[in-house]
Amino acid sequence: MKALMVLGGVVVALFVLSACEQGPLPERTLVLGASINDSTGVATDSLLGNPDGLVIMPSGELVLPDHDKNELRIISHPGFKLLRTIGRKGEGPGEFNAFYDVAVAPDGRLAVSDNLNRRITIFDATGTYVRDIVLQGTRPGVVAFDAQGRLYVRQRSSENPATGDPIVQVLSTNYERQFGIGSFRPTDDPMGQGYMNDVRMTPSPDGGMWVLYRYQSVLEHYDAKGKRANRLVVPVKTPEDTTGPFIHHVPNNPNRVGIARSPVVTDLVASGDSLVLVVAIEKGKDSERKSRVYAYTAVGKPQYQAVINYYVSRIAVLHGQIAALRFQASEPARLDFYSVKP
Image 1 (cartoon, rainbow, N blue to C red):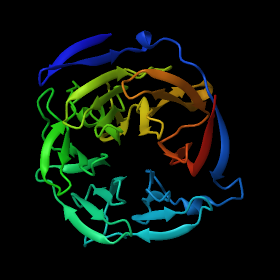
Image 2 (spheres, rainbow, N blue to C red):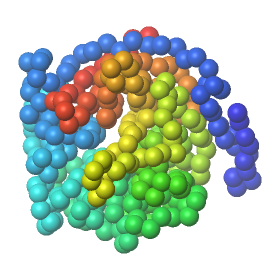
Image 3 (cartoon, rainbow, N blue to C red):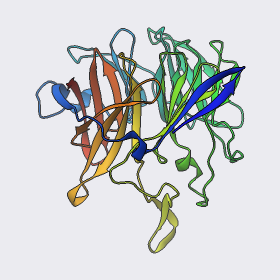
Image 4 (tube, rainbow, N blue to C red):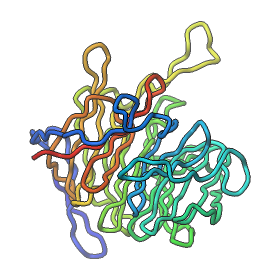
């Protein structure tokens, strides 16, 4: 479905695509190339550490946050050697207390959001500490730089916004607030607001930003001025109720809660061929989970789909290859590189 809206006197198209409107997608095969894991002999999982993030430097180096050591691990590609680490556990300048996310700017600057220290730490391309950014009244969540070098920050406030309020702050290259994007969606589950509005972001070539709602299976595109241009629903083979519940109380212990459900889409990345790739999770036999990668154009038109036979937590693109990170508490970390076969 395509709706029309007026922005500054110009009529633009707003795409709102549901799974049924997208139709069947061509299936592509992913060919495994290099891999970092215990079984290949290329490297051991100790090289990856305990990662829950993956970004690529403009130079092609891999950046993975190690949650065990509270440091960023910079790994070469090709070769897969640990080049250096950035940061350490602590509360001082350039130190971390609890990673939440990491982002890289076009000029190589790194932004690291720290949940417990309640700040974002900026490093230059060499890993030298530059400054901290403190957002009043909120904890920083996921972060991303756009093509202009502006920093997008997910706000995680203790007070819930009103329905439809922005959930992401956009900061200038001088880290001054400019405007907000995203749309807060409430839920009847009192502890589910954070899940319902949990997002990942990736920059688009036009200077804007793609925002993925991980529990709603919704993908939105905002232009460089913060206007929403596209919105689509990512098809999920084994959907879960997007309204919750998101947590449950542990039997015989009402003071403890557990996570009732996982996100239906985990991550996204803009590729060098003007496509955005989104990872959706599917449940198979015996509760096994696999990932389905969907590729969309800049205007939200579906292009192809491909399957990775494990749970992909993070995705990136390097030299035309898809880098897929598997990280689950019960399994060793694994980073695979795939080529897309037509």
